[in-house]
Image (tube, rainbow, N blue to C red):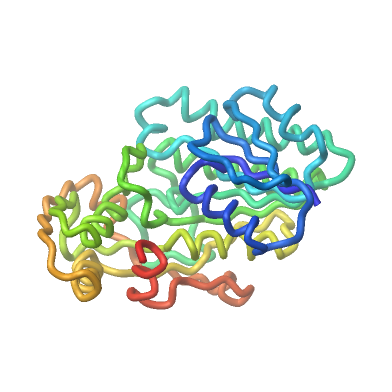
Length: 303
């Protein structure tokens, strides 16, 4: 089996690669990793790195020199950056996705594909509840690009070019404390601040409610999606729903007291800290799981 991972040098991508190399998921003979750069590469003879921009259609000739059996498409320009630079977001998040799908279409057999979409497709303000029937109404270019990506995956699957599915992921924690281009970076920053006993200033209120998923739970969801027939499905995986106050209290229990300042930005609060109940009925029935509880989330995210 040949597995291809785009965005393999990123936060979620690198975690997925570690899990695959450790034996999670299907057995494989070749693992091709695609990203613009890699800080480090696994020392494993099964790994083939391909460095380049997914907006460049020529990258797929190298990445798919051997036809892929399973593809995890994680590469994208994050929401904040896609909003500031429209052309960049369109080139990577739309052009890159379609370029990959067209390259897979030219294979002599359909690959199974898992596309990392986003809850950004719902926009804001959100309804009183988000569930499998909630319509998408993206309020940012990033959400629009992810929604169009889902539609492409569904249509290419309908035509038999691929067997794909999409996962509407929330903000994943805890990303390393470095510039990421993500408006939701505060969700990770508060966790590292607690662990490292340093002050943190949050752009949301103590009562702000967020959807939470650890990188471990995200990897599990990606691998589980890959184990199911794609059929163009769009999955809304289960998440934990916690206020910042609840999370900070649990972080204090785990690591001790630390200095938290709440300085709400109405725009950030509206998009990332006003999340209603999320009812993932179909995904739970199909075997997807969340982090369990806030203690499990913290342990999986920062140890």
